[in-house]
Length: 516
Image 1 (tube, rainbow, N blue to C red):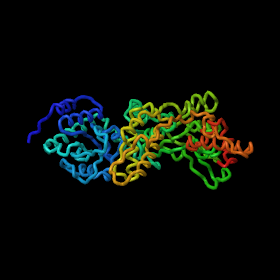
Image 2: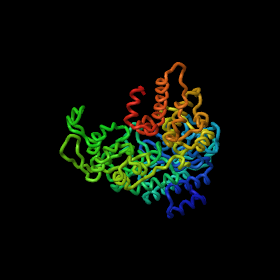
Image 3: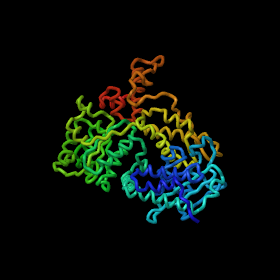
Image 4: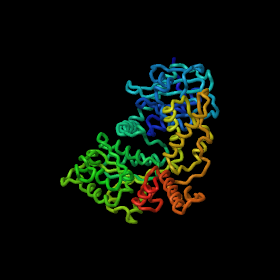
């Protein structure tokens, strides 16, 4: 049969020669398809490893863009991907639909009733899928297979043109390099967001990644500074070499030098064997110094010397070693102020901040909240084994209205708690679980970490029990203050001590005396 090209699709063909960002091309393609076919939603998903990643959606909720669909967990998507012909799922299909509850036109539990999908290939290699969904059970009765094949070929042409610009190819390379470099207890992660702030951050990363300039990453707690460091390494010429992580705040002051530069056997009490330092381990790669603002002043000159000369010296050794490393540092402190107040060396600060990058807070990237929420929902759904999980409209409104003092980390933990709550309250019969605003528990006003004065802390209002001595009441008061500070700063002793106005050594001794 002859396929008639509609005006919306004709405009897409005409625009192929124009310079548009990939996301804009994909979005216009889906809009044109929805104007041509009787569907309520359309989505374009790219295959990356074992997951299908939404690059554009039309008619689906915003948080869908933050979800990663594991192919093995979604039989409909798997069947579409493996088929050389268009695939249709009728309303009585027993296979679960990955978009149930995600259609933006529907606020209740009404499920998708008619589904179509076609696999997409580039250079005879599976690229992803194009999916069409409708609420009416017979919506696609009049759609001819040739029409779907034409749409698939058009989608492939649009994708191919986008790849020729180098943008889509660069993004795929980013993902590959990150997957190779990211080794942590949470598994591979990526920067998620389409706000202007995140676009600017991505541009800065791209700009400086392939140089060997030292980078200082700043930003509030929980914004994802470590992810930025890992992205920088993954996009650098050192991507195949190690990325070595050092948490400067977690190291005892007397062990920082040994941790960074290594030591020889017998160099100090307890050094029963020689040890390689982080600089040696990172040779040829990247050394990531997290919480650099917490590094003791006594060690800063030795770090500066290593950065200036590229030479390191193990504790207890007279010989020098060469270490070719690229330095990336991160802090949530204002190092410029720390320098002015004498807590950080000016020359080390200037050596580290050759190229500063500030990671935006979550409240500064308002549009990304739902994308991140969708990403964390999908993570929890896979981990717990739920069939369907979505955000109720009331939850979306609550998420968008909140100020996020704890940033992305707070959002991640909040979503995880809400999923556990909704799972505990299910009766086992529902195939789709909804996160509502009350499960998020965002009604109580919260203050950002570090903004509370000691008088505002829970422990400061504690009343001594009858019969307690002054010493006992004082110890109880101090214990509650210390526990509260440690809890809010994830057991970061240096930051807790600083907030309480104490020297870190005195803080540590007080903790031991109180048994905290």
